[in-house]
Length: 402
Figure 1 (cartoon, helix red, strand yellow):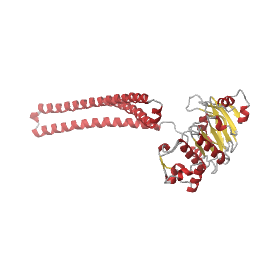
Figure 2 (cartoon, helix red, strand yellow; figure 1 turned 90 degrees about the horizontal axis):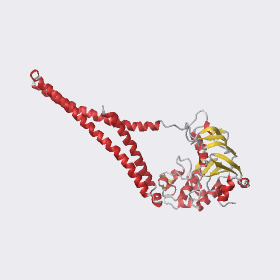
Figure 3 (cartoon, one colour; figure 1 turned 45 degrees about the vertical axis):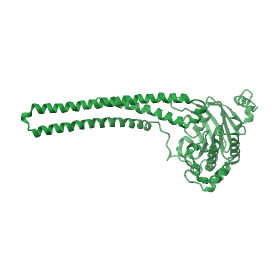
Figure 4 (cartoon, helix red, strand yellow; figure 1 turned 180 degrees about the horizontal axis):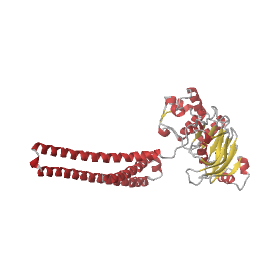
């Protein structure tokens, strides 16, 4: 009983100290090529040694405390047996030999049971530490409901793809400084909108806001006359598509990555691959649509992974498409193919392009220039280039576009 509180605390420290070791080890394995390329091997080795030393120290304390507990239990049970033996000696004249033998026998058995109960108590306490850590995840702030039975959009929503931000402000956590401040803009259905700005200006946060990964502090986002905060997350995210900077692919077949719910026939899959300029590559694979995709698409090039995401977007045929720096990490040829396909196949789709490379948005209908979470300039590329002291003109000049 005395050792249980201490053992619980030490076991909690051991459990907490093990997680950084496993996390660091996994990250090192997955990023081994980059670590070697940048000569950071020694740094990662030293970090692992430091984390492992902390974990080992906690393990040593746990083992030491467990050893002390075992010694204490054995001492108590031995004293119990000794006490029983002394009592039987003192009252031997009033007890028959059979009774004395039974008392000593049961006393020794009880000592073993007491030791076992102590061991089980410690094991239970150690297991409760794991339950505590699981409960931490249960108590995390939850997202909005997956579905809202009271408010559901029409089956064909959105039909036009009109997107409007009205005095929208947002922060990543309650109490944090807003990362978006009083955003106001409206795009017509089918309009091409470019979002540009310096690093940290809040460009990608606009995409997160549209998909309600971050929730508004003030204001609203309306898509085809429907406030996105009033509908369920599933209804919202199912109807819009995003192509992120880092393609998301899962271990499985190409067919499953394109159409995980088997909603489309093979003809539609092949058509989307052809539009994404991947048909020849997939046709050359022995298994065709059933060719294997490694976790994260590691058996594909960076350009091919992005084109697979583009094919998936074509298959979904959403009225709102977000390109979150989709061409920032691909070669020039893949960038050309993505732009060519976007122009040809998404003519009636509202395309919001978040870009660091300014030349990727020069053909957009409307440009939003963000700085410190606010829209500082807004208009067509031609109009913004006329503002010689404007941020867009300076960025275009730095990029060699003027």
